[in-house]
Structures are given as structure tokens and as C-alpha cells.
Image (cartoon, rainbow, N blue to C red):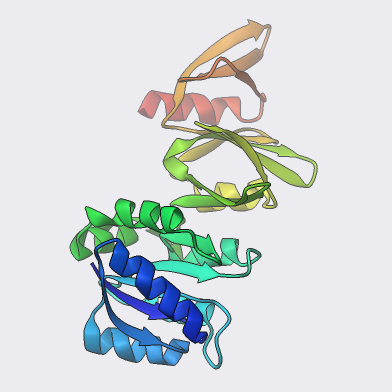
Length: 245
């Protein structure tokens, strides 16, 4: 793949260039700020942009916002020293968010996910992720003891609110995120359904509805032994959705 590296630190550019080359890809251009990225993309048409966030003038997030309007557009992989921008970064459909110093193994993993995608396929994915003018994420970012962890939305069983945090239960365990259930419900209304004031479940994993007492129900999810309670308020809508599955 053809790669553009955007970073205002020469040593960072040099190191990323070496990693990209070692992985068998081609660095076709470098840029030092967001405006230069836009100019180089128009000129060189890279497949992937490795994008720093803190750059002079137009920063990486502002640049990504501009790139989100291009069709087709290159894949964006953020390479930054700051982990606090991950949630905002994924609003622009970033394919990766790596913390400096970027490990080759982590970079390779993201590139492996992109290798089979053509520009046309990427464009199609981006169109699928737009609902009512808003871009839908394909990953959930969570800060853990390992750093920034990315969970593919297709691997999420449910979201469960607990005071100010939300638990994301997924195929490899669970993490806490600092988001609201209401915002998650609005963004992922086509893939998740509310079953309780504190719970959203994935329609992809919804397996059945069980009566446990008079008027009390719980849902059964594929691949999980856990059961989640369904409130009386949300039961009719859940039943309606199940009939349509």
C-alpha cells in the first residue's frame, strides 16, 4: 500500500518510514501539518495516512475531519503521544489509534486489517457508517491498563450502565468507557436495542426471551451464559424487534 506520513517531528517521520518499509509498503510522501496532508493527498492519492494529532496550523483531528468528506478517502491511522483524543478520532472513521512510540507489531496488525480492502470497499464501508448525516464508528475505544484498547463493534454483546461509566461486554472480556448509554443508543440504534434503562444489547447476538416470573423477562444472548433483565417499559419494543429478525 502507498502510505503518507504526517508528523512535524523529523525523528518520528524517519522511524515510521522505516517501519512501513520493513512491512513491505511504500512511503510515497510526508507532511508536517494538516494543510500539507490535504495537498499531498490530492497530488499523490495514498491508500493510508499515518496521522499525528499535535501539528502546527491544522492539527490531525481537524485534518481528519476534512478527509472524512472525501470519496474515496485514504484509511487514517492516528499515531500520537496523546491517548485522550481517541473517542474524537474515531468519529472520523479512523482505522487505528496507536500511541507513540508506535510498536511495529501494533502497526502491522492495523495494516493487516487494511490489506484486503480496496479503495472502493473502504468507501462503501464509510457510506454504510453514515446515518442521518452522522458518522457511525466501527470500533469502541477504551482506556485500560494496557493503554488504548479498540473493540470492534461486531464483537460487542451489550452495553451496561453503572453510575458514571458504561461496561462494554465483548468477546474477549469487558472494559469500562466514559460514555453515556443515551449517546451509544443514538449512534448505534440500527445494531443495538435498549432492554432496560441501564442496558443496550446487540441485535446480532439476541437469541431469545425467557419468562422468569409473572411479568418478568430476561434475554438470552448467543455465546453468553449471562442473562439480562428486560424492563416492562421496553418489553413491547423488544418483542416487536424480535418478530422482525
